[in-house]
Image 1 (cartoon, one colour):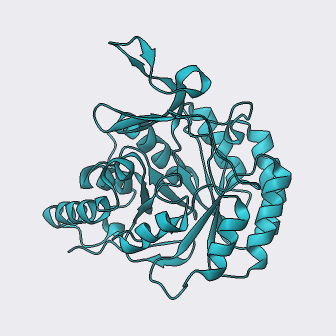
Image 2 (image 1 turned 60 degrees about the vertical axis):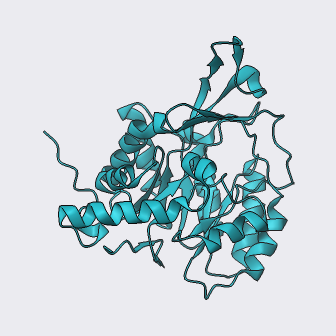
Image 3 (image 1 turned 180 degrees about the vertical axis):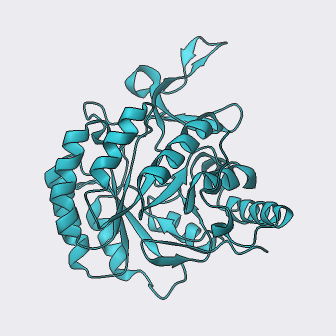
Length: 312
């Protein structure tokens, strides 16, 4: 096989693939499935300060062509559950542990960051600025000023390399403005993009009814539907964040899309919808497919082609 290893935040991953936060990561049983899989790492469910049941069901629906819509509403076990998991994690494992935090206020995020930082363990924090499915809570990533204010508070608390998860951006001016903020923070070393494309609507033609219950059917789109938006965000931030890394997520159903994410600039790739539908065996399949593509194209390592997409 080709060499699929990579490093994020100075930590080596045996391969570039892991779960998108939100899929196969809420409970210890879920996380064990990730550990037993052929992923290169694992990330926890985005934690809030208190345990959350999330939005009412049905809140997830698979869509045609390997896509999905969801309005989960951040169901999770509360940050202390993941704090305890982090305390007991075997850090001699070849898979580094990423922990996702998604406080419903800056104060909550600060408290959670303080608690995880106090552990002084080699975990990697990822702060979620991008959940589109909590009623009444706007996405922080779309408020550039508020995002900078949050980073001014959180970056010194964390005081070591960390990342943030971003919503999709659609305007060049927004890429520029967001990157200008991120480049002010030296220990913000990576961005993960994209979260789901917020507030899509799926309607069943036969029943004339929306597909999910929360928010009158509005939910985040994922899977193949969002591939091109994801690639644009990966490449835009790869170009604008020298010295930082990008984790690509969105639309990966096979080795081909994973190859495109790396070509656009991704240093690692997360999988969401396809993991939800196929289960953890997806990592072995897509790893082999990517390796076969690399060998056929004459690439030995990810660095041979990462970020080298050609323009006309």
